Image 1: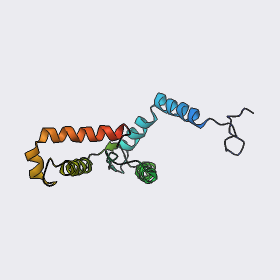
Image 2 (image 1 turned 45 degrees about the vertical axis):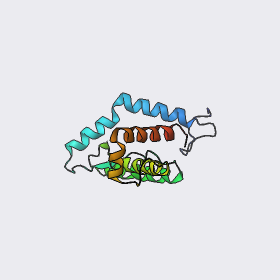
Image 3 (image 1 turned 180 degrees about the vertical axis):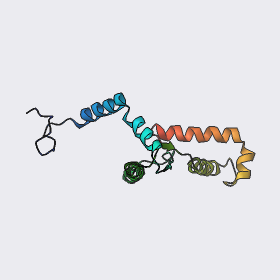
Image 4 (image 1 turned 135 degrees about the horizontal axis):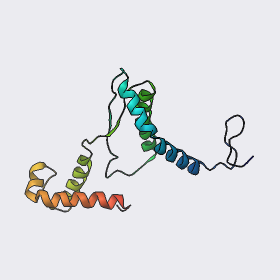
Length: 147
């Protein structure tokens, strides 16, 4: 028996290469159009749709173990509803995730003495275009691992 073959009870052997096995499985599902077939079958059923809008990760938040839990929960419900026969297309939702970036940048501008207070009026006086550029800088800096 090779090291990457499942044992008789279905458990993987000691030398299983999980990343390689997963890549092969995903390739196979793509070749067979498994996800598209799942959607097609559920569109034909009378169960209806279950829509789950998933917001993006917070742009300026530092990743932490709690993100794993929320990702698992956000994956659990659509899978469960799909198994129950509902049409569940994955949709990326957008909400106020820009707001934490704007609040942080506003605080930075107050600390630097560039605006008097973190308010809409002060930000408009500062200028929306320079404010947006600072927000973009903030996100890019965090994404690149600098803070």
